[in-house]
Amino acid sequence: MAAKKTPERRVIRASVKTLSRATAKPAAAKRAPAKKSRPQRRPRLDPAQVAVTYDKLRARHSDAHCELNHKSAFQLILATVLSAQSTDVMVNKITPELFERWPTPMALANSEPSQVELVLSKVGMYRQKTRNVIGLCQRLLTEHGGEVPRTLDELIRLPGVGRKTANVVLGVAFGTPEGVVVDTHVQRISQRLGWTKQREPADIERDLMALFPARDWDMLSHTLIFHGRRICAARKPACAACPVNAECPSAFRAENVGRKAATNRARP
Ligand code: SF4
Image (cartoon, rainbow, N blue to C red; front, side):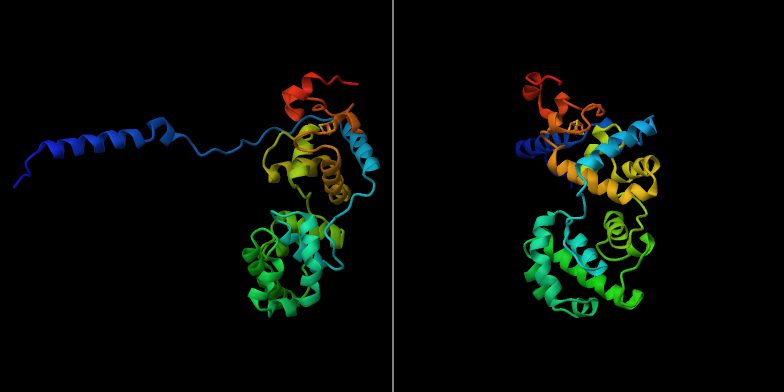
C-alpha cells in the first residue's frame, strides 16, 4: 500500500532535494580533468652563458658538499632516507646514536623496531622511516650481500629509496651519479635562473641533465642547494648579494621579494 504524503514527509523530501542540489558538483567540474602540470618546452639557452653563471655559483660556493654526516655508503643511504621531510641538521643529531647502536646492515635488520623508533622519534614520519631502514637492511642482506648497490635501478627498489636518494648515494658515495638531485632548492633556483620551465622534479631533472655534462651533475645540485640556503631563499632572495644577479632573469623580481619590498628596491 502506498504511503500517504503527510505534510512532514513533504518537508523532509523538499529538504533532501535542496541538500542534494547544494552538495552536487557542477557537471563541468565533474568532467574537469585532474590537475596535472603540462610538460613545458625546454628553454632556449646559450650554453656559454649557462656555463658562466654556473662557474660564478661554483666560485661563490666552492665549499658545497653533502651536509649529511656519514663515513660509508651504508651510513649515507640511511641518513638520506631519514632526511625526507626533515632537515640535515636534525638527521645529523640522531644518526650518531643510530650508527653506534646498529653499525651494520645485519645489526639493523635484526633490531627491535620499537628501539629504533625511539632513536628516530625526532624526525618526521619516524615510524614509517623505521620500517624503511629495517626493511632496507634486510634487502641489502638478502639481495646484495650486505652491500649498498651501485646502480640506480637496484637502489630505487629498496624500501624508502626514490630517485633523489639513489642519486645522492651514487653521486656522493660512489661518484657515479645517474641524474641530478632535484630538491626544493634545486627546483626553485633552476626555475629562477631560467634553466627550466618545468614544475615536476623529474622534468626539471631532465632539463638539467640536458644542460650540463654528467661530470657536473653531482656538484651542480650541491652548489644550488648551498646557494638556496645562503642567498637565493624561497621568500626573500638576497639578489643584491648574489654573484649571478647580472645573469639571472628573476633578479629583483616582485614575485620573489614581495610587492612591498620590490617597490623600494632599485636594481644596482
Ligand atoms: S639574482 Fe636573486 S633570484 Fe636570481 S639566483 Fe640570485 S638570489 Fe636568486
